[in-house]
Amino acid sequence: MSLARIYSRAQVGINAPEVIVEVHLGNGLPAFHIVGLPEASVKESKDRVRSALENSKFGFPDQRITVNLAPADLPKDGGRFDLAIAVGILVASGQIVCSDIHKYEFYGELALNGEIRGVNAILPSVLAAKEQDRCCFLPLANDSLASLVNGVKRKAVSSIAEVWGDLLNQQPLPLNIQYPDCTQAPDFLLDLSDVKGQPGAKRVLEIAAAGGHNLLFLGPPGTGKSMLAQRMATIMPTMSDDEAIATAALYSIIGQSIDLTNWRQRPFRNPHHTCSAVALVGGSSNPKPGEISLAHNGVLFLDELPEFERKVLDSLREPMETGTVTISRAARQMEFPAQFQLITALNPSPTGCHNDKRATPDQVMRYLSRVSGPFIDRIDLQIELPRLTSVELQSSKPEETSAVVRARVEAAYYLQLKRQGKVNARLNNKEMSIHCDLASTELQFLARASEKLALSPRSYHRIIKVARTISDLKGAERISLNELKEALNYRAFERLLAQLTKY
Image (cartoon, rainbow, N blue to C red; front, side, top):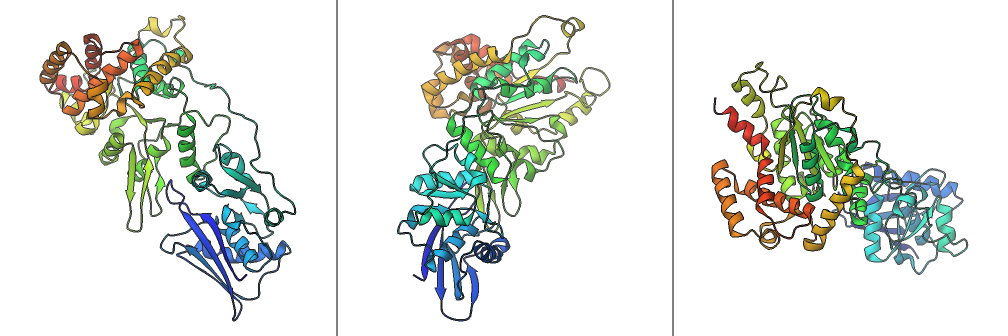
């Protein structure tokens, strides 16, 4: 047989499209050509494949070898196709005879001695192979990560000789190697009990964790804004299997190792205020996920908010609404998930505090106007943190731990999932009319408050969602007037702007 068809996978964003590796051995002068829009790293695979086969004691055909990577219009890069090309040559030259070769997929980079090295983005590949009900031959280095996907058939290989022995049934490889479950119960180094005082801020943090709401801390330096934000992940519900795998898949794309002992813990990303829009949202000529995608199903914390460039902050506005980010380039377009919870912190003045008389109201307004109104409009909860008194700082009174708060958060979280299948912050207008129905008294109160505070329609709906979360934390079926009043109270930034414009 002089023609072979081997299945593999490319990596395009979070997706792993199928690639058919066609190998043809023809007459003519000995040559080795790879076609199908290969990048430089794929073109170089012919030298790796030749050396790997010869050093593994296989015969390298002295013929004209043509390798086609189909579909031809899909760019291919990296060394992930080395193993598939090598197996295709062995099948086409008759050194491997396997009638079930169409039931397998192959990924891996070859060393010159025939060993198989790990590749990036293994999770999207095995997830796609699972849908096609194919068995994956993948590098041993990637197998423990791939084992997180339930129901996928896989064989871990460390050399091309092992692949040959398995396909010829001479030395079959074990199917689905089982690894000990090393997932540990959450053991966070940080705990909410470390924060002295600030009961109002802790209450808002609990509401945000329960309902998936965005949050803004406003206050002078040293009031605990960063400490509270860093402890958000300790009170959030544990990720489900699907959420954890989706987040791990994003990290596997950028080649970052994943700690299997805490892979279910929600990510916490804290980019510096000098980061660019591309670093935050994602991009480059070959688009990669940015900080907002790496915070998928977790927390994105932006400290010193006005120090970020305005265009960088405004680039977050669309992903905050849609939960996805689409990166368009001349050559390709990619979409990455970005369902993150945003926590921001800022000082109310360039001098630290707006009433320290070191800055005029105009200077404070110029400082705060670096953050656009539409961006603030997308933040559900805004609270001002007061300075701590010496009594609160020196208090030895035990504070509530993260475990206690997390128990209440999880009860409200699972109540929302049971009722509507998602957290309150992600409800659309149609779903709100069903699950956030208000009585006439509450509607009249909210209408008066909306007129007096000049709330935008987006802010109006976000107040109702926050009130729904407060009701869920209480275990109440309907939203009452008290919950609406509490939700309206969490608009500290807007109140500060209104106070400054009086002067």
